[in-house]
Length: 79
Figure: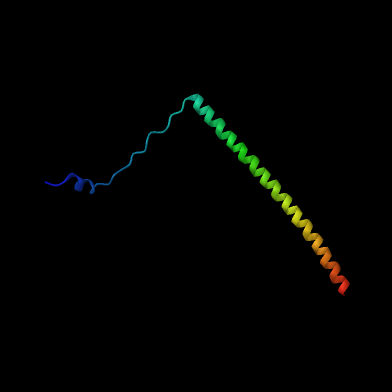
């Protein structure tokens, strides 16, 4: 007589996923409003990051132009 545990290891086990969650209409509406709010908050954050990046780019460009003028002036003085 063979042990049942030794027979089970010869079969491939299939995991059945749980049934999908069912929402009531009010739960669905609340969930959609929540997700919409999260999306809007992420959009505001992305917009502020883009604005800060644009400000940093402008600052670096301004410093670059000033440094170039200074270097060009010093080169002209040496010649």
